[in-house]
Image (cartoon, rainbow, N blue to C red; front, side, top):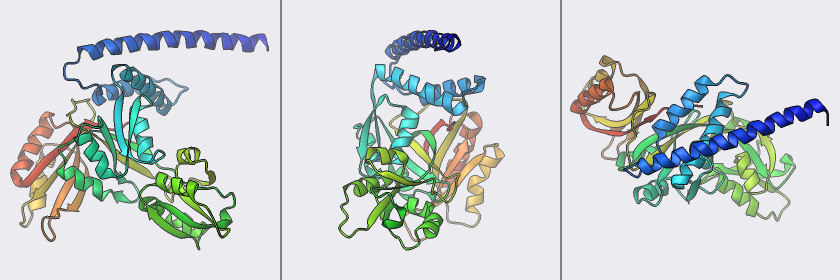
Length: 360
């Protein structure tokens, strides 16, 4: 080993020792802060978002903002676990994109509550059998997740966070020859997101939808071929690792920017972070111009609307509810004033929650 190389490694070792000391000092402070909390709420998404934004803004490189976020989410997650290991419910089995979203938001310092359906995620948090839930709400290619919207309408839970996760699909199989694939299993949205790739690459393949991508990977792992043909799953690289499958093709989604947005569910509200969103659901009166009249206060008070989604109310034929996201916290003066006026004009208005807007 050259003296120059040894010198660099000695410097890295010294920095690592200092980092270890500082991280433990941070953990001690975090534990002391935990002892001062009177409401029992351990996870403070608004505070964690403020920390991440400040560190990413102050980052001079060469690490990327994404790398800085990943590192410090891990630090905060493990410090938080000294107070309590949070239980996080998500659609399973292990290896789903919902699990990836939960890992991105909460890190490794948490207990996984694997659910068989999105409905079960809601029920687990509502019954306090999980501290938080992570559910998909919309995809940039396929649009809104109707079931999640329907459940948000009826639940007592609050939205306390959002996660945006780039979705990169892989074709997984026990087989190594893609030409021998006869069937492909995956979630219906994933099959749609890879529709053109499948038509071009495997035009004769038979596709079948299952409850989740990871469930498809699990099925392929357990499947025994009797006729020399083989099945494959569309899922993530993590699913390939978990179920010991070969990756036959990567990034097979039709849209390279394919992204899914997830919501974090809780039994408590979240304080303002300074960069927030508020999600609401409302219905308009059945009269001409009612929708324009309903949304007018948002414009007049300078509240920016970032999402508008209609959904059948299931209360009557051609009766709809409207899911709306706006910038700002519901306690912000202009948002509060606008929502108060909207509530007077609406047949029903429910604030689903205010939460920090997702960062990288």
